Image (cartoon, rainbow, N blue to C red):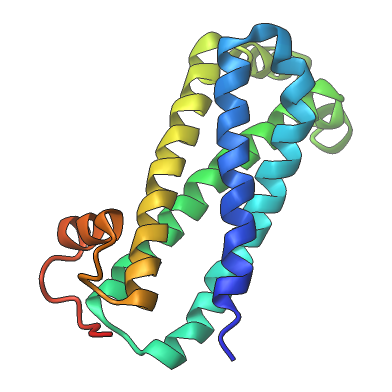
Length: 178
């Protein structure tokens, strides 16, 4: 039984919501603090869910076999997971600094280092970087989704996004004919 399609959609939705919240909080500073919890929940559950989706994808390969299309789909999925994982780690560090977990668990970091790190993470460049990375993650997720659609429905079935993604990222030899 292929459970990959069941597992994969929830993390994608959460990561998309996270990215939208990231953009809204960037352009609406009054909502930034109000959206922090939502962003953290969506991001962390999305990252954990995408890890599970990657694992279930490995099992799904037994049904579909290996092909250029599946390999490209898998590579892009791993890249999107890594990107969102980096963002989640940045948020973890921010929260650790905010709630003073750093001094408790990382006592070797002096107050000077913690203060400097807090200034860096709260800078507008880092805030913009998180928003840009979140948007890049959405683009990669869309490509992963389109390639997954081509795996399930077949190549050349009339879905313009899937057809474009296959043509752009896989080429003509997909190895999948459905």
